[in-house]
Image 1 (tube, rainbow, N blue to C red):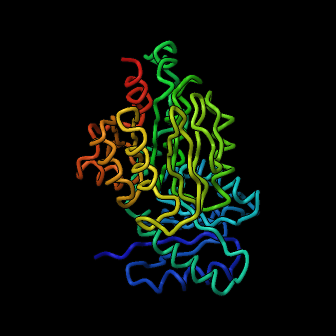
Image 2: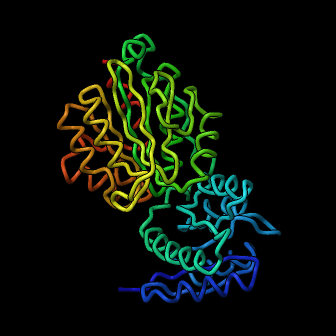
Length: 351
């Protein structure tokens, strides 16, 4: 197999050296070049044509987000951000994901030696995933990337009669932007939504708060025993599993720590199986872009329980992994382009 060519971009020489050496430990990865700033990085991209770029979030001449805004429409390339755990670092990381980055890793904050090794392991894994990502759509100008709001084909009267319904969404790599594009088209009277996005602790709260400023529905990071209500979206906190429970006519979420399921915590599988059990035919399941197969069996259980199930199609996915596995295992009734996903879900309630 051809090695994955990587460009490492960081303004600190020591960090560039550490990352280059750490990545070179994997026989599938070749660091073809490093760059101290985005201006040098652009020249290295043209010269070496890397498969993946690692990019420091915070740099003095131009931060990673501004670089992505300029780079992606001209030279779309899978990018893994290297993020700090400061509040500013988290904010810029989320901006970077919206600007086209595929994923991110966090710099260790404590126990640097052990944390650095863990970060490098994670970075090597995410580079391999990123090398399979589809970022070709960023070749279009940024003006055409935004989804133009369209009139919703479902009336609020129909939605108001669907208060016992549940929408469950799972996503991983590329999911933060996909989730945004779907839920910002949900009107305020949409049935309750529960979401698992693979994301570490500390980022999901900021992610939820950002979505809350963009959506007609209320969006919040889920807390244990939160009610699932019409007009509310609950996002599973990083490092915690979230499952649905029902008592009489009331849905709530159970949020608790636990072992990883399919390698993840929170796990889409945990959420989808609970939705199949407690909501059954009252649920709609949505699988968005992501690597691996987390949630595939849960989606199948949902469909067998009478739920309607949709998955993002390959052409619009950053990584057609989770939707593909769910589809192949019979858990998905229809593959839907991302631009049409909100309508597909809302049509279920509109008759």
